[in-house]
Image (cartoon, rainbow, N blue to C red; front, side, top):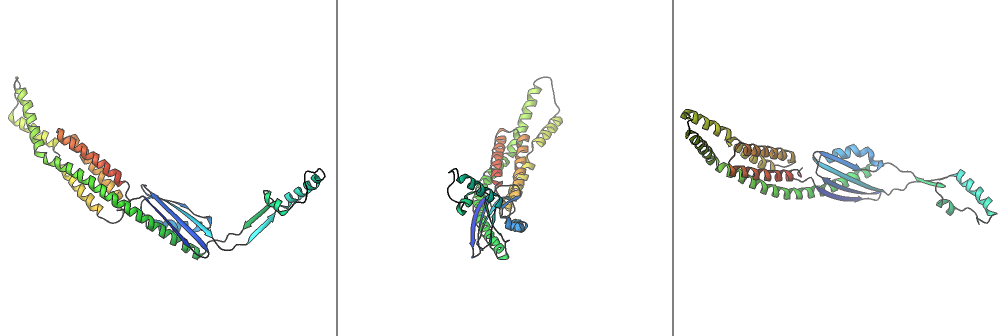
Length: 293
């Protein structure tokens, strides 16, 4: 079991470049990948996404690539001659007024916006640099994976505890099943006895039929059996490798539904309270399950 929360970072350096990759993952219903990738590597985006998808199945994945290109590139210097000519002409006219002293220098031009434009030709990423990128990505994903596994182990322990408590509640309800039937029968007979104190008389066959019908409506055996089955399926899923979050979330919803039905059908006070407690623990299980991949 793995959590969807993790963090990883890796740096790979060579003579030609330095690649730094940061991976952050958080909870999400599906796999949602957000990349911050230098423009020179945009052609690799589809491949990167596919590579990530082979290792992660769920979660919001934010990955940042910082790449320092250490190759030598030719620089191009472009002078804004129109602007420089206008400045030179202005300086000559200002000299007579004492506003300007001296000539226009290169240092002055560098300080003037748009007077000099320096551009460096950026070459595209070569195969060696792309290889470095994927190497750093794998290292960062592996580190994030270790963090997700560690968090998953903690979630496994917590979920197991909650599941055990909920199972205890279901077993306690099951132990009272015969008492529930007896209580229903006694209450119905008591009510009929009160009616017979007056002029109303009810045939015994009718009484037996009504009692049987009431017990059938309040019977929770089917819900208890399904709850036991869901718990066993839940435990089996927790022992599986790979992403199990969605399956466990579905099973949790099913257990919650059975507990709700059970609490509605049975009006026995202690059983209703046990069912409510079971629903509370079931909801806590679901909160934890939603953190799993």
